[in-house]
Length: 111
Image (cartoon, rainbow, N blue to C red; front, side, top):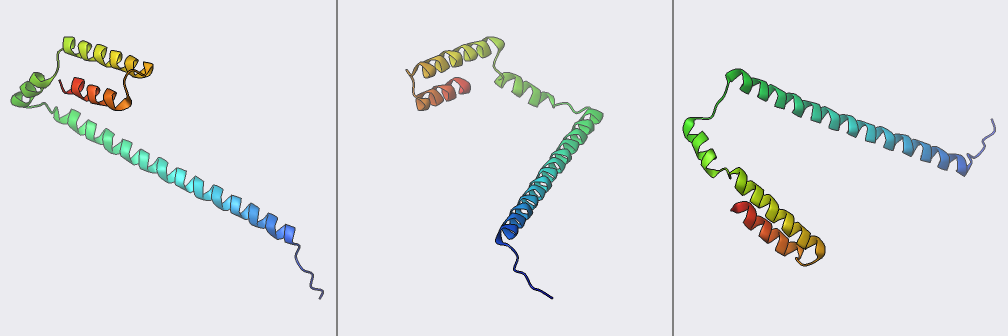
């Protein structure tokens, strides 16, 4: 029996092919796992929505009136949108810094 040393190139090529196959398999498994998690979340959300629809859940009157009082009217929403649009234009022009924009946006949204 004659013993021949294995060429180094063949070993390197084999290692590269094996490494690439391992990496591809690992990424495929991660992708599959991510898809399964997403499917489970969607199913849970659909089940929750179905349960709520079957029960015909409605907010108690006190809760409904409280949310209506806190909800801005359409006029206020338009005004807020216009103000935010104007602030964004000023930010894009470089008149406002990002920090100033964020501060003004917080004030507008809290009003």
